[in-house]
Length: 188
Length: 154
Image (cartoon, each protein chain N blue to C red):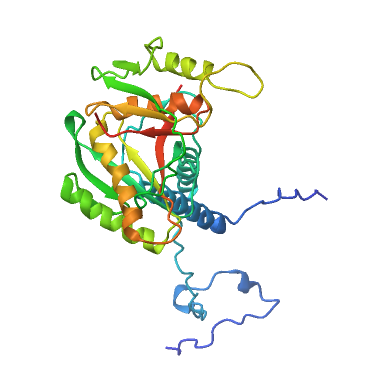
């Protein structure tokens, strides 16, 4: 009995037996390559802000349109007579009799009111008529005629239950007619 | 040899600062609209036609709001943030308050805002209170001036 042949067949370059696959018991697994552990990239959290920008611009446009920096209110500047000591008025000064305009609210509607002018004048039925009356009787420098000077005292006399808007409309009619001395009286 | 296609240019814009400025603008407009409401009580002011009134935004001004109640009555008077009852005691307190303001600043203007439906008997005492306050303050150079606030009608 001969000893088993311990020497495998040679693998010389010119040896044709190299083309044949090795038997299974001779197959040597390839050594594992050393792979450096790859650094994981941090997870990126993405937020799509497209719709956020759209809504933001809509809000901005809304507020720009809705916000009003100019006041829609206006005011009549009125000097309130300050109470001074008794006897300061000039006793020789002839006071003009003020033109009294009574204003009375007859109902809750804005057009329910009654006007009355003290004196032999045609009574106005509306605030526009009152304005026409006052304006036509204003003494002007460029025209002849006229009855009242611009500083002629005009007293608006509302009743206790006159609506504030009717009192202000009467005041406005006198102010529109360019009278400068318009006052309110105590409620009568 | 094939030509290599050029990638189209990638145009990107950094919108971070744009969003910041936009939010600042929004906060600004929200705050401004709130500030205007402090002095203005929600009232239906008298609306007059073709007024010769002025806009007059005075630096030193006090706003008196005549707070309406049903049936043309008044519930209270509000001077800035201070509120006074709508009766004689409230008017007296308001006069004292205005007198204090006149002492601090003799040249202040007083804006009177009243609802169009309020009865005149409740507004006239406010005008009288302003006159009394000016006299009571004793400050030199006080010329009580009242601005009667209206809105522009048609």
